[in-house]
Image (cartoon, rainbow, N blue to C red; front, top):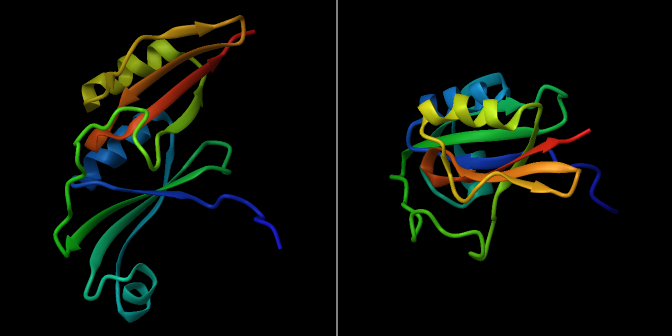
Length: 146
């Protein structure tokens, strides 16, 4: 049996409302919100007595989803280092295709986004950049050139 599809990527945020606002500005749609707790969830995640809020965000094409989470209990743990560089082991970044890279960056800055390096043209194919979003999550943005 092989993987059928990637359903979603989960990211934990201290401020769920700010994370939702950031991804709405990026162009994702809020699919729904809920609070999760219970034995079934404790057993899946391996944390007893957990309680967390979830917001499911989807890309406009409906294929990509982010599961934004914020734990009420137990207390959330800060990642070290807080803003790891791109060569850190583990999940590196989430990449989004955008229509207008410069406009997207400008709209995300009021939501705390900061460029990591620069906007770079890759041949005649893409404009690319990395930026830090809420909680220091590393995001890639790519604008296809035609």
